[in-house]
Amino acid sequence: MLSVHDRARLVAFAACWLGRLLALPVGNKGWATGAWSMTLRLHRRSFIGGIAGAMALAAAPVAALRRPAYGPAEGIIKLNANENPYGPSPKALKAIAEAATHSAYYPGPTVRRLQEMVAEYNGLKPENVVLTSGSIEALFAVGAAYSRHGRIVAPALTFGPHLTVVERMGGEVIRVPLTADLDTDLAGMERAVDNTVSMVYVCNPNNPTGVEIDAAALRAFCTRVSATATVMVDEAYNELTDDPEASSMVDLVRNGKNVIITRTFSKLHGIAGLRVGYALAPAHLAEVISRHAMTQPNLVGAAAAIATIDDEPFLEFSKQKIREGRELVADVFRRHEIPYLESRANFVYGDIGRNADDFRASMQARNVHIRGIYAPYSTWSRVSMGRMEDLEVFARVFSEVYNA
Image 1: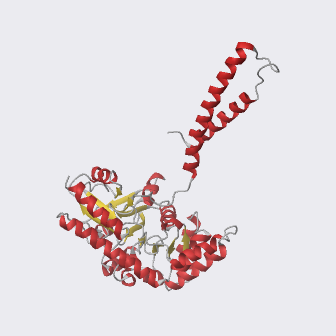
Image 2: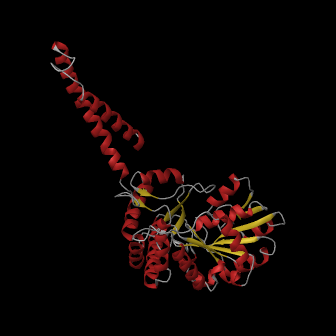
Image 3: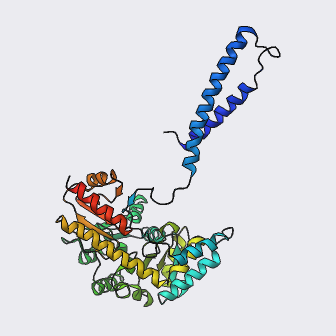
């Protein structure tokens, strides 16, 4: 299939030659006369017809391919990226529309206002907050900063794009296997920490397992380990837990511990496409993150985050829908006697007992997109939450594919 640029070149080529041919003199006033004139007329008609067809064939797909694509295509059930399709909230949509009319201007004042609100929401000061383009940018920034000074310790199965980048940059990541129950092995991670380690990464609840670490155990771990290395706790799914305040380690930041927290507006708040996240840290660590972060939220994203950060009716609605979705997926797994993990995030991780990549491909052929293998767990698959009507389609298709 031709690319957009190739199609555009074909259109330009055809238009050029069509223009030349139409300008060619024929008959008594030109150089082509007699039989040659007749032949040229016939050839020109055929050529013009062919060129016109080529132009139509090339130009139509160019226009189609240039149309914006927003989210999954019609008919696609997208359950593979841990998004919240119930967002953005009505308040966020109103803020998006208003902010878009001012997009000619840089977002500085809006971003500063969001920084103040995030700080207040978490009982911190603005200098403890680093706003980024999604929390992934904060993770990248911390990885880039700390990998220069030592090794990084992380679970072997966890959210890992930033860890992969660290390794590609020449850094070393010590990956500690999960326990037999697929819990984060805090004891094993602590044993791996010595004076060659600069940073420890923990995702809570973990992705892709959805398992929440006991808050008291994690707090004690962070307190002990942070005396040797900085601990970064990825709390992308914290707000989906039963008691977000109790499970968060933000109190350690308030107390000046050597701890960094990262969060996102992509999950509960439902604005993944607007790319808004942040890091919380003692001021001197926040400064380090700021020096290594490449981006900050744009005007529209910051405005949406301001509108939704404390939109309790929408946030509670989203959380309830996620709970309902988790129960629906868990029920599908139970009916097929599939072992699964109790999730406190917006996805469920289950052992389908067969190659997860092959199963994913079979589901995708039926327009239902789920996740495949997270090595080394080749038979486990993760299913993200979606709208309830989409999850009902998932339940039907899953059963058909599983029982085929």
